[in-house]
Image (cartoon, rainbow, N blue to C red; front, top):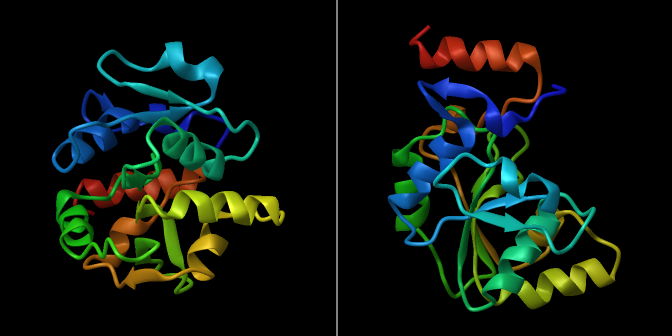
Length: 179
């Protein structure tokens, strides 16, 4: 889209990073926003940056950086480009968490694969993610598919629709306005 998807506004004055962080605060005491190191100072006030320490790996780099910051934490990870996501879906994910598994993920309604950026990653995933990386796999979805992951059908599949194009943005804005 040639714009920072996290800086888009769908929910009033809050940008998408702020909105997503507010959703997470209902379930997590410590909420951080994964950013490249050069983006940390650009975050709106009140958001806590989690600078990537695994450069150039995209979402996997952010996830590994989170585990490096606290390897004993379970990380509830959300993408910033899910403007339709609500508390109801997060409540479902958290309520059905299976901590003995590698992760608990919601299933994509479009391809039946787990959504790595709407997932609770358990502490045991850290070492396995590093192992996958050492084998040349930098895709968190492949790690979920090839591990002991609990994959749940989302209660409201449409909430997992992400926004990557101006057309998808317009469709999300229409949906949020009840259209």
